[in-house]
Image (cartoon, rainbow, N blue to C red; front, side):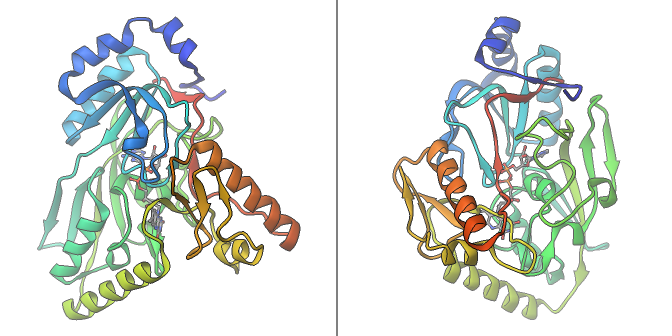
Length: 329
Ligand SMILES: Cc1cc2nc3c(=O)[nH]c(=O)nc-3n(C[C@H](O)[C@H](O)[C@H](O)COP(=O)(O)OP(=O)(O)OC[C@H]3O[C@@H](n4cnc5c(N)ncnc54)[C@H](O)[C@@H]3O)c2cc1C
């Protein structure tokens, strides 16, 4: 097992840290609450209770909360907009940090944008378009925070984070703060080497993105506005509104996951409160108190049918988080 992580359960937390949760909650004050339903924070409205939920508002608070949490010995995680995570119905043990550190600074002299990692991508991207700065127009409709976008190397319409990131400030496993360049993330299609740390033990690296700096270019403002409107319209036309995590699967080389699921005859298939969208077959929608179990059943069905009918193995783009994996340092 990778150093710094344990397989943990409610029993583990109760046995190893009988008083740690309430002690930590007390020292963190108003930003921490015990036993909070994560479904309220999740874009797809799924997720059981977090033992302790901590909402952080700025860089200094992130540093402070992580320092105290590490000292407590409790397992912990950090999330942004929860737009790409399928959380377990049983919830998460230990400490769940939700990042609302949203400050953004635009430097007119260098066309650089420095953002705290909890900044909302959509707002930041829109502001760059209004200023006539090119490089983030593709992101005007991208849900979630900068931190999540970096971890996933999020992208759309031919652009992605790897193409514009100048550097990032991160907290590395020993607690030190470092400035790293894009190569450090080993970005690939919808992937960085930090992706999946909340979902599996293999390859987990306990790193937190604190701030990011993007280098943009001066462009014709009107053309950027036209492009942004076109991208927003494409999203409106093709993506169903509602409780969803967006694309469930990555597109396989040379094809589209949505096309394959549709061709397999699965549009409109329902499991419990989850349904495969009639509008976009890669979008799985929570239409009536859907659960993680319902979502996982649809994932398995789509994978089995597409493999059987077309010989293509679909890989999840969303992160499927198990109850039993947590950071402990
Ligand atoms: C309707 C819809 C449309 C979408 N369209 C697209 C699209 O076009 N392209 C695309 O790429 N994605 C798309 N997505 C997926 C999602 O929006 C992106 O992946 C987004 O970047 C995730 O950001 P988040 O803040 O919600 O991350 P979360 O879901 O909160 O977290 C994702 C991962 O990042 C980690 N993480 C978050 N913040 C930090 C941090 N500060 N430090 C370290 N780790 C962190 C979490 O631990 C987790 O492992 C879409 C989602 C929806 C719901």
